[in-house]
Image (cartoon, helix red, strand yellow):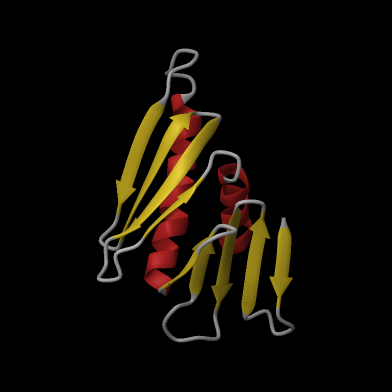
Length: 128
């Protein structure tokens, strides 16, 4: 995990192979950033908070579901707010994450299963 912070700590970017997430407290509108190596989108503070909360809840749900599923069984779970929809798909120990903005900007993004655990850890470290 890489962590870039300005000297005044108003800007933080965490990134790794296949994922990145950032937060800026020194701007008015688009305070958050999420993406991968090939795409990124800036999010409003509300969208960013929703993203972090829903991603964490879905990761926790997948851990809980591990005890309920048989070996080799996949699951798909979706959570939504007014602004975003997040979906996880796969095995409890290896799942993808799909983001859809439900605002006028109409955006979709995707993280593969190899990147998701690191992204979830970064969210915990960033919003702690």
